[in-house]
Image 1: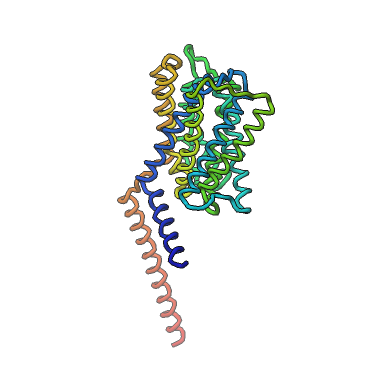
Image 2 (image 1 turned 30 degrees about the vertical axis):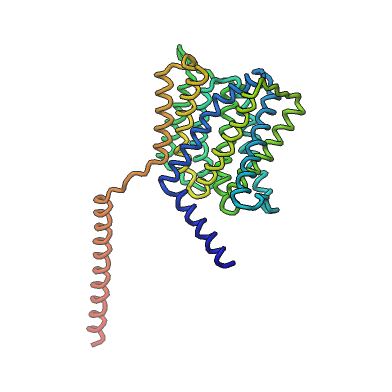
Length: 359
């Protein structure tokens, strides 16, 4: 028994070491971002394949719910097989699952799906990048997980400038529909909150278990909400079912990888890779949806550059100036030495004076 416990502890340590390594973070984060980026055009294609009208919010919620029930089922089934035991929550896990599912699935996608149907996939993918900045701000101000520095504030402002730029149309007018881009933006707030939650909750709970069960719970909630509101799904053929299964896989794989990274790294180190979401999302939207004409390429490129620069600036660690630091330390040591010598000389003078008077 002790041998098995030691083996499990060693395996867990090795996994944590890989997840916190540069190669592990780079590999898992980029895989997650590519999958999430593909969700933007796939959602719009799915609306067509399932005959979901642009104004049919109930059917959009039903579509989201079924997708996440599939995602949760995939994670739970796959990890149960991999671990050789059922991935079932304990009593103490349910509170964490409920909180995480509220922000990660119910609020985020309950707002995202209706919003995306009224916004372009390109704009939505870049707006979603703001979740990186929101996560850092929430981690510092609300969850006390990060230190908010002036450099991070500047990075956030630069990134939000990119989000704003992509919505400025020809003639200098700013277009931000509350029912379109507005809902997509509010969904990012829920996503940012969930990133902070998973980083904290993973200290006491299995991040993969939380991932699978929060999808299942949140997916059931969205499915019931969409069904009771009159939503329907009418798949046009096997390609519609295949797309739905792929979208379930997107969530199952991407969020599980992301949760594992957050359990082994600070929020800022993981979320810095979120700049790849708009890169993948914009590129795949242009390729799959033909949205090349929906946004000026120069403006889109500049917006992506600003978003990327903002996220990099937030997490950039400036090297310490060893020369300046050394000189400052040397000066402090010299000053301390002078003070000590002065105190010793003063004590010696006092003793000498005392001895003369005594004599």
